[in-house]
Amino acid sequence: MKKLKRILLLVAMAIYFGIYTGSAQIFVAVRPTRPHYERVVAPSPRHIWIEEDWEPRDRGYVFVGGHWAEPPRANVRWIPGHWRQKPRGWVWIRGHWR
Image 1 (cartoon, helix red, strand yellow):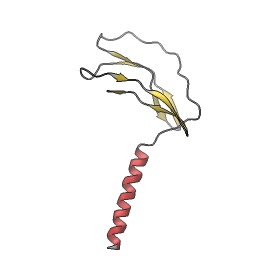
Image 2 (image 1 turned 90 degrees about the vertical axis):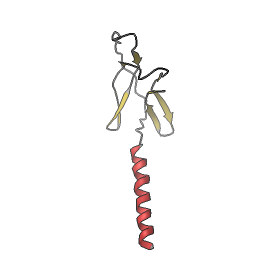
Image 3 (image 1 turned 90 degrees about the horizontal axis):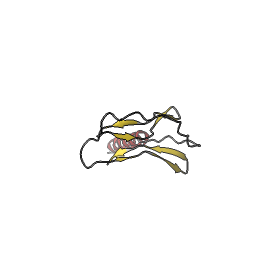
């Protein structure tokens, strides 16, 4: 019985820490400023411009710019990414389709 409890506890800890580390966010003390970049011509009228995006790298973020994207289906719109200030610092919230 003790062995079963110990195994269940280890499994529960592994799941908890796996979820916790998998959803970790990178916080920065100073919100990065967006560099200037030029928007290129749309490939078609259906394409939607996806504004700035930031990728987490090392212990910070790298600007990856904007791009044109084709909507995945009708009645869907792009929710832009944005910076959110939290007690530990700034974190980038990625854009998504909704």
